[in-house]
Image (cartoon, rainbow, N blue to C red; front, side):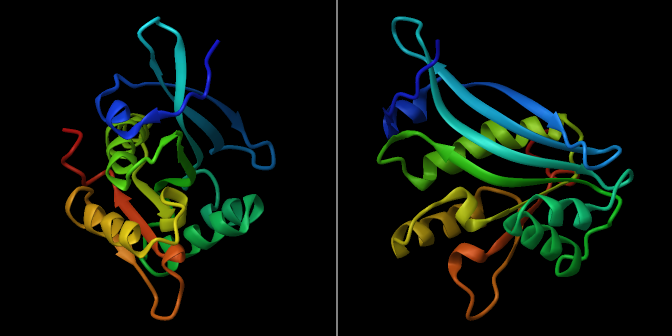
Length: 190
Protein backbone atom coordinates (compact mmCIF):
# COMPACT_ATOMS: atom_id res chain seq x y z
CA UNK A 1 0.00 0.00 0.00
CA UNK A 2 1.26 3.46 -0.89
CA UNK A 3 1.06 6.37 1.51
CA UNK A 4 1.22 10.12 0.94
CA UNK A 5 4.20 10.75 3.15
CA UNK A 6 5.61 14.25 3.18
CA UNK A 7 9.30 14.02 2.31
CA UNK A 8 11.66 16.93 2.71
CA UNK A 9 12.69 18.96 -0.30
CA UNK A 10 16.19 17.41 -0.18
CA UNK A 11 14.70 13.89 -0.09
CA UNK A 12 12.51 14.70 -3.09
CA UNK A 13 15.47 16.12 -5.01
CA UNK A 14 17.41 12.86 -4.66
CA UNK A 15 14.55 10.33 -4.74
CA UNK A 16 14.21 7.68 -7.43
CA UNK A 17 10.77 8.48 -8.88
CA UNK A 18 8.49 6.17 -10.85
CA UNK A 19 5.18 6.96 -12.55
CA UNK A 20 1.90 5.14 -12.40
CA UNK A 21 -1.57 6.25 -13.23
CA UNK A 22 -5.00 5.74 -14.56
CA UNK A 23 -6.99 7.25 -17.34
CA UNK A 24 -10.55 7.59 -18.49
CA UNK A 25 -11.63 8.08 -22.07
CA UNK A 26 -14.06 10.96 -21.88
CA UNK A 27 -17.33 9.45 -23.10
CA UNK A 28 -18.76 12.86 -23.99
CA UNK A 29 -16.60 12.70 -27.12
CA UNK A 30 -16.44 9.93 -29.68
CA UNK A 31 -12.63 9.83 -29.90
CA UNK A 32 -9.42 11.50 -28.88
CA UNK A 33 -10.11 12.75 -25.33
CA UNK A 34 -8.57 11.29 -22.18
CA UNK A 35 -8.41 12.52 -18.62
CA UNK A 36 -5.47 11.09 -16.75
CA UNK A 37 -4.19 11.06 -13.21
CA UNK A 38 -0.46 10.41 -12.96
CA UNK A 39 1.03 9.45 -9.64
CA UNK A 40 4.69 10.10 -8.82
CA UNK A 41 6.01 7.39 -6.51
CA UNK A 42 9.15 6.50 -4.60
CA UNK A 43 10.11 4.03 -1.89
CA UNK A 44 11.44 4.50 1.64
CA UNK A 45 14.31 2.52 3.15
CA UNK A 46 11.88 -0.29 4.04
CA UNK A 47 10.72 -0.52 0.39
CA UNK A 48 7.34 0.88 1.33
CA UNK A 49 5.69 2.78 -1.54
CA UNK A 50 5.24 6.51 -1.09
CA UNK A 51 3.17 8.84 -3.28
CA UNK A 52 5.17 12.06 -3.66
CA UNK A 53 3.03 13.84 -6.22
CA UNK A 54 0.17 13.78 -8.66
CA UNK A 55 -0.61 15.36 -12.02
CA UNK A 56 -4.13 15.75 -13.38
CA UNK A 57 -4.04 15.90 -17.15
CA UNK A 58 -6.39 16.40 -20.07
CA UNK A 59 -5.16 14.93 -23.38
CA UNK A 60 -6.84 15.82 -26.66
CA UNK A 61 -6.05 14.65 -30.16
CA UNK A 62 -7.00 17.72 -32.23
CA UNK A 63 -7.17 15.60 -35.39
CA UNK A 64 -10.10 13.67 -33.89
CA UNK A 65 -12.05 16.28 -31.93
CA UNK A 66 -12.31 20.02 -31.31
CA UNK A 67 -9.87 21.03 -28.57
CA UNK A 68 -11.78 24.12 -27.45
CA UNK A 69 -15.11 22.22 -27.21
CA UNK A 70 -13.44 19.55 -25.12
CA UNK A 71 -11.82 22.07 -22.79
CA UNK A 72 -15.09 23.98 -22.36
CA UNK A 73 -16.86 20.78 -21.27
CA UNK A 74 -14.28 19.97 -18.57
CA UNK A 75 -13.73 23.14 -16.52
CA UNK A 76 -13.28 26.89 -16.69
CA UNK A 77 -9.52 26.68 -16.07
CA UNK A 78 -9.02 24.04 -18.77
CA UNK A 79 -11.06 26.11 -21.23
CA UNK A 80 -9.09 29.26 -20.30
CA UNK A 81 -5.77 27.53 -21.09
CA UNK A 82 -7.10 25.94 -24.29
CA UNK A 83 -8.53 29.23 -25.50
CA UNK A 84 -5.21 31.01 -24.95
CA UNK A 85 -3.30 28.17 -26.61
CA UNK A 86 -5.47 28.43 -29.73
CA UNK A 87 -6.20 32.16 -29.88
CA UNK A 88 -3.14 33.85 -28.36
CA UNK A 89 -0.42 31.36 -29.27
CA UNK A 90 -2.16 30.46 -32.58
CA UNK A 91 -1.39 26.76 -32.23
CA UNK A 92 -2.63 24.43 -34.97
CA UNK A 93 -6.06 23.04 -34.08
CA UNK A 94 -5.04 19.55 -35.22
CA UNK A 95 -2.20 19.23 -32.70
CA UNK A 96 -2.07 16.67 -29.94
CA UNK A 97 -2.68 18.77 -26.83
CA UNK A 98 -2.24 18.23 -23.12
CA UNK A 99 -3.28 20.54 -20.33
CA UNK A 100 -1.82 20.12 -16.89
CA UNK A 101 -4.89 20.93 -14.84
CA UNK A 102 -3.14 20.40 -11.49
CA UNK A 103 0.31 19.33 -10.38
CA UNK A 104 0.74 18.54 -6.70
CA UNK A 105 3.98 17.67 -4.93
CA UNK A 106 3.55 16.36 -1.40
CA UNK A 107 6.41 17.32 0.83
CA UNK A 108 7.72 19.53 3.58
CA UNK A 109 8.46 23.03 2.29
CA UNK A 110 8.80 21.91 -1.33
CA UNK A 111 10.65 24.50 -3.40
CA UNK A 112 9.62 25.58 -6.86
CA UNK A 113 12.95 24.16 -8.05
CA UNK A 114 11.81 20.68 -6.96
CA UNK A 115 8.39 21.15 -8.55
CA UNK A 116 9.95 22.13 -11.88
CA UNK A 117 12.49 19.28 -11.65
CA UNK A 118 9.71 16.71 -11.18
CA UNK A 119 7.66 18.27 -13.96
CA UNK A 120 10.65 18.29 -16.32
CA UNK A 121 11.98 14.84 -15.47
CA UNK A 122 8.72 12.93 -14.99
CA UNK A 123 5.57 14.49 -16.44
CA UNK A 124 6.93 16.06 -19.65
CA UNK A 125 8.82 12.94 -20.84
CA UNK A 126 5.66 10.90 -20.21
CA UNK A 127 3.62 13.30 -22.35
CA UNK A 128 6.32 13.28 -25.04
CA UNK A 129 6.24 9.47 -25.12
CA UNK A 130 2.44 9.63 -25.46
CA UNK A 131 2.88 11.67 -28.67
CA UNK A 132 1.73 15.01 -27.29
CA UNK A 133 2.83 18.06 -29.31
CA UNK A 134 1.77 20.98 -27.09
CA UNK A 135 1.45 21.19 -23.30
CA UNK A 136 -0.32 24.10 -21.67
CA UNK A 137 -0.87 25.08 -18.05
CA UNK A 138 -1.57 27.99 -15.74
CA UNK A 139 1.10 29.26 -13.36
CA UNK A 140 -1.30 28.39 -10.54
CA UNK A 141 -1.50 24.77 -11.72
CA UNK A 142 2.17 24.30 -10.85
CA UNK A 143 2.71 26.67 -7.94
CA UNK A 144 0.00 27.45 -5.40
CA UNK A 145 1.45 30.47 -3.68
CA UNK A 146 0.91 34.14 -3.09
CA UNK A 147 4.61 34.57 -2.26
CA UNK A 148 6.15 37.03 -4.73
CA UNK A 149 9.57 35.42 -4.13
CA UNK A 150 8.30 31.94 -5.05
CA UNK A 151 6.52 33.36 -8.10
CA UNK A 152 9.75 35.09 -9.21
CA UNK A 153 11.72 31.87 -8.62
CA UNK A 154 9.23 29.93 -10.73
CA UNK A 155 9.35 32.57 -13.47
CA UNK A 156 13.15 32.35 -13.50
CA UNK A 157 13.13 28.54 -13.69
CA UNK A 158 10.55 28.63 -16.46
CA UNK A 159 12.73 31.10 -18.34
CA UNK A 160 15.94 29.10 -18.14
CA UNK A 161 15.04 25.45 -17.56
CA UNK A 162 12.00 24.60 -19.65
CA UNK A 163 11.68 25.33 -23.38
CA UNK A 164 8.43 27.25 -23.25
CA UNK A 165 6.49 30.27 -24.38
CA UNK A 166 4.80 32.32 -21.71
CA UNK A 167 1.90 34.69 -21.81
CA UNK A 168 0.93 37.13 -19.14
CA UNK A 169 -1.60 39.90 -19.61
CA UNK A 170 -1.02 43.20 -17.88
CA UNK A 171 -3.43 43.59 -15.01
CA UNK A 172 -4.21 39.88 -14.70
CA UNK A 173 -3.11 37.97 -11.62
CA UNK A 174 0.19 36.05 -11.86
CA UNK A 175 -1.72 32.82 -11.27
CA UNK A 176 -3.55 33.25 -14.60
CA UNK A 177 -0.39 33.36 -16.71
CA UNK A 178 -0.53 30.67 -19.40
CA UNK A 179 2.53 28.67 -20.41
CA UNK A 180 2.97 26.45 -23.47
CA UNK A 181 5.70 23.89 -24.07
CA UNK A 182 6.16 22.67 -27.64
CA UNK A 183 7.25 19.07 -27.05
CA UNK A 184 7.49 18.44 -30.78
CA UNK A 185 10.34 20.98 -30.96
CA UNK A 186 11.89 20.34 -27.55
CA UNK A 187 15.41 18.95 -27.73
CA UNK A 188 15.32 17.91 -24.09
CA UNK A 189 13.94 14.45 -24.91
CA UNK A 190 16.16 13.54 -27.88
